[in-house]
Every structure is written in C-alpha cells, then in structure tokens.
Amino acid sequence: MTYKNVTLGGGSYRFTGRMKGMDGDDQVTFKVIDSKTGQLAGVFKAGIKANGEFDLHHLGQFDLAKGNYDLQMEFNSSGMQVDWFHMKKS
Image 1 (cartoon, rainbow, N blue to C red):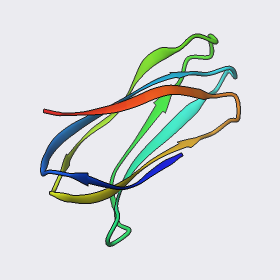
Image 2: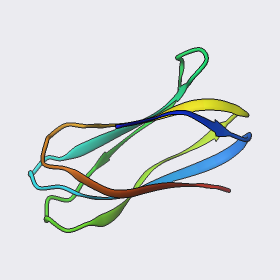
Image 3: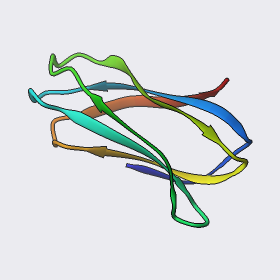
Image 4: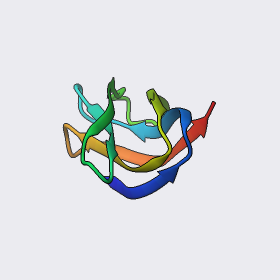
C-alpha cells in the first residue's frame, strides 16, 4: 500500500497504524521514499500481533527535510488488515 507524493514540511514525524494480523509471523515494513529522487529516507519493521484484533502499531519516527515523499507499507502475509494510518509532526 503506497501513498504517493505526500507533501511534508521539514521536521520529525511519527507514523502509527491500527492493524491486525491473522498469521503467527505477521510483519509490516514501513518505508519513506523521496518522491523526486527515489532514495529511501527511512525504513522501519514492526511485528504485528496475530490475535485477530486491531491494535496500534508504531511504524517509526523519522527526521525529514521539507519535500514530497511516498509512504509505503509492505506486508509479509495476506492475512493482515489496516484500519487506519496516521502521522504526527513533533
């Protein structure tokens, strides 16, 4: 799942998702990619509880320069679900 060309002001951003896993070894990899250069600006891997319930999961905190970014979540299994995703500038 990718959000393309998201405009962000410079600063520190914390990313969180409300997700659930169904398999025993669910993981999500969250990537922040510079839209202009394609360079990876940050990556964070998180394990997701396989209890079938939605829980909040920290997806990383990154110091980003002002610019446009692609925000990408990659899942290691098809049994994962995302209810919502948000970011907060600190």
